Amino acid sequence: MASCSGDSRLIQFFNCRLVRDHRLVEEDLWVRNGKIINPEPIFFDERCKAHTLINCEGAIIAPGYIDLQINGGYGVDFSYDKDTTEQGVQKVARGLVKSGVTSFCPTLVTSPNDTYHTILPRIPMHTDRGAGVLGVHVEGPFINPQKKGAHPEHCIQSIDNGLETLCETYGSLERIKIITLAPEQVKELAVISELVEAGIVVSLGHSMASLSDGERAVQHGASLITHLFNAMLPFHHRDPGLVGLLASDAIPADRTVYFGIIADGVHTHPAALRIAYRTHCQGLILVTDAISALGLEDGIHHIGQLPLEVKQGKAFVAGSDTLCGSIAPMDECVRIFQRATGCSQVFAIEAASLHPARCLRIEAEKGTLDFGSDADFIFLNDELEVLATWIGGVCVHAK
Image (cartoon, rainbow, N blue to C red; front, side, top):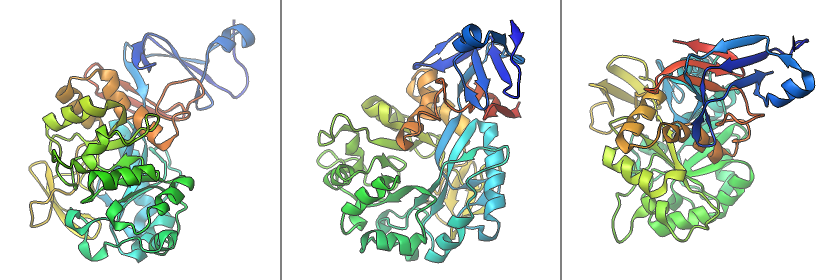
């Protein structure tokens, strides 16, 4: 059997365990032209062998992690550094591959309109040897001031004129993939349906919404909850609020409500992680909600318009006890979640890969190792530590 000819280099990864069909399987992984391919036609039609063979030495090969909510990292704040937006996103993208993240949604917190108008057009949709940008997550400004968290109250708005309000605020919806809003800040919920039709995921968060408020928003197309348990009404047995969407009987059986959850050991108690996992595991998505201090030491940093202080591994709005994002990388969140819930390694991995891909409806390209999907994957050891990261079939990080 001869080596395949031409420019389409064929790579065979062997001595590995693949995350496929929700389990670990002992199979080789084949990559060509940045895609994961079916090896059968290689053997039976092309009758050739790989150009490159890589011995994985028993490592787990998993889909690359996808972070749907990340405010910055490595000294970069996406909502603050307006003059260096492109360079900042590139810097974070290259840093994220060390934690196994191969795709992400740069997240902008509540800001003045001119900040959106300046930053959104400058967000690069392509990165150089770093995690890919899937679109922007705008977390606000249409949130409830009573649950503002680290969002500046003077910038908070309500949606009074549907898409017209959104376009006035953001300037353009072109690069936006996710919008976090409080449903009670929306005059007419039909705007949610319009956003969904435009390919934008509507997420509910920073809200005082009742369960019925949340159900109406979901019935109009909302499909995600922003950092479950944080910046929303606490669970109450007579009205469980947005948390109740995890077990609502008003949502059709063929609809999945996804929810982001921060498993950084600070934002969400291990028992709360277990409750979420046992109640609605298929909708669970791990997010970092990481801030500019990710990868840095304690000190003063920024989140949007507000100064923040990192002390003893926790981030607060400066001069307060208000938590304002995480400094834990995604691979650490995966490990914390797996230990807290006792779930399988595969489930913990899929909560950071397959589930966010499904939420964005890109699971045909991302979040799996299925034939035809993008060759974005990571090598892990049995402790779920990242050994290497590959994007488009190219190694961009090796430990």
